[in-house]
Length: 258
Ligand code: PEP
Image (tube, rainbow, N blue to C red; front, side, top):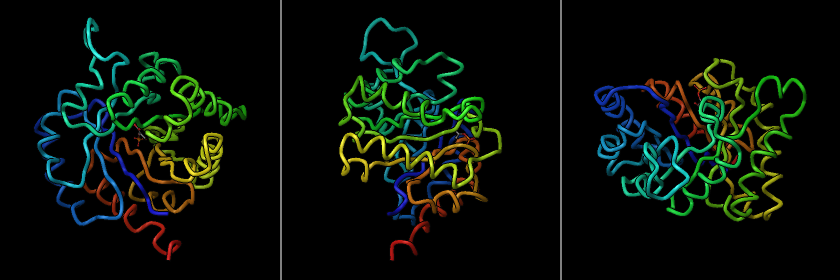
């Protein structure tokens, strides 16, 4: 299996000028990498500029959140239809910062996932446990609950239309990544859970790891059999780091495959 997707999550960072400069460094460097898919998820106000900068490249456009409604009196909302119209292919839903800071519940995340699918966007569904939850041994229970909310609302087949990102909350932005073995264990569990909807679907699923991925640890994480790629936060804002992570994805698993 090859690495399927490396997506950058810029979070709420940057200016139009810094986003442009970042892409001027990243896009040409990724052009020769044909063995994986790449994306950047930019803040809403930068999507237009990023869309222009990515035109004709092998890097897809993504957003970081979406409103659950399609249109109407939802001041401040950005709909999936608007994102699709702008050229987005991906949208992150259920990021732990949305869950913790903005109160996105499992049910709301499921509605957002459904909105994305309705408009042919690929939702990147983030799941993951807090440190307290890991330490009390309920990691799988938490991840199952977060997945089941989407399966319950959208149906198991809808997971075929999306990507799952396992992002342990304690690893996001902390510099403390999950070990490759910890990531593998949860990814294997997620794939097993998806198998309830069909083995073929589970085998084809794209399960990303996110949480303090950097150039120095990407290759080891990507070498794990159930790690299909990465969702990269802080390191995606540093051109050299992001490009090195994407190169690690490109060369990952080649030896395993041959
Ligand atoms: C993220 O924001 O999704 C993330 C994984 O952040 P970081 O890589 O900075 O831990």
